[in-house]
Amino acid sequence: MKSFPDYRSRAALYLRKSRMDSDAESIDETLARHEDTLMKLAEKLSLNIVRVYKEVVSGDGLFTRPEMLRLLSDIENDSLSAVCCMDIDRLGRSSQKDGGIILETFQEHGVRIITPSKTYDLSDELDEQSVEMQSFIARQELKSIKRRLRRGLYKTLESGGHVAEPPYGYRRVYIEKKPTLEIQEDEAAVVRSVFDMYVNQGLGSQTIADRLNAAGIKPRKSDRFSRTTIQFYLKNPVYTGKIVWNRTRRIKKKSFTDKNKYAPNPESEWIISEGLHPAIISRELFEKARRIRETRSHPPAPRDTIRNPFAGLIFCQNCGAPMQRQYSKNGGSRLICVNKGCNRGIKTEYIEARVFEALRHILSQSKFHGFKSRAEGERSEILSHLISTMQKELTRLNIQKNSLHDLLETGVYDASAFRERSKIIASRIASCENEIAKTQSELSAVASPSDTPPFTTERLIDSYISLSAAEKNSLLKTLIESITYLRTPRHKKNTFDLTINWKYQP
Image (cartoon, rainbow, N blue to C red; front, top):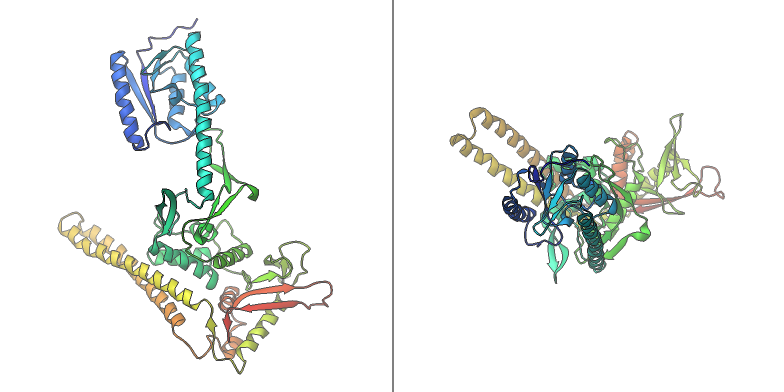
């Protein structure tokens, strides 16, 4: 029989907060209290404490607990002879497989488990059975706790509560002890501006991110906006006042080095309810953003050029799906429905010619006295809020600039550091002022009534042909809400039905 050293010679503490511990305490407070208790126990039992393992991350699976993995590795290297913990279930009560790995490692290396109530020697059959029974009871208790928590969670979600981290634009509040959200106006103005730029101005996610960064506006968890952040905002239904839960599930790690992975759940398993919180944007605007997003490609690396002048504008009259541009080897292109076999395709040049003639017609009508945007009031409000947000950032930067002189005088900065910091802040101030000026110009253009259209027939004829695809797309989105296309076998060669829904009314 293999002999083991005295269990008192190389002992360790394993500290981990349990669901049974008070939520009034932080993890650090709980672990500090447990460490004090176990150190007194070690002194009483004459244990030589050589290491302390503090598990500060949450997770039931073995591979989500780095300190337990480190402890098991040290046991396998025969570096420990005993482990002190508050209860047996602190070692693990997730799955039978994980629990078996932990207990077998302890048993094979003769490591004692010491708790304030009892010392367990797993080479003793009675102690082994006792530990196994306690581990079994702990696993069943954990399953029961999870069921109760899940029922409470689903009840909160179905009644409109919001249980996740508040997204950008909101802060956490409680209504009759139920978690929900309220609008944080400075951030909400940015969210409205993102949707306005994406839907009404035809800008891409990367361009929007660049504009916000140039204005000195920051997201919550980083210094800069990215196109991924903008896309997350555009896809988040919480901004419309809805609650959507269980869209994805986490795939359990098979090793500690595995990354967190998620897989989509079928829509039948989603939980969708009306939230208690107010909406930041309308559902109509959110739906428009979704339709535009479906017509655009999203390459792994940002691509700043638009090659389709009808991107986000033209849809199949049969199924409502977006029409996409298909390129041919000879340099031409066709617009086709994304649903194969639904609607016959057509050469892009035929669509462009029809739309161009429609633009000429509406701009040259004798009864035409100017455009009036249906979204004019909402756009003005968005731009005003964005200007206010940028002005607050400009004020903060100027205060920061002035404080540099104090830091120089008190010796915190030397002359070189002062010049470098001054240069950086001056650049950010100039960028912010430039974005404020551009946004104020946009606001003036929206707010000022005009007796003439923004595009005259002469200007359109002279400039349209020479515009790039991106410039054409921007112009068309200024005037057109959407286009529906239909071409069935009954249509003769190169004929089709086209319906244009104008943003502006004569």
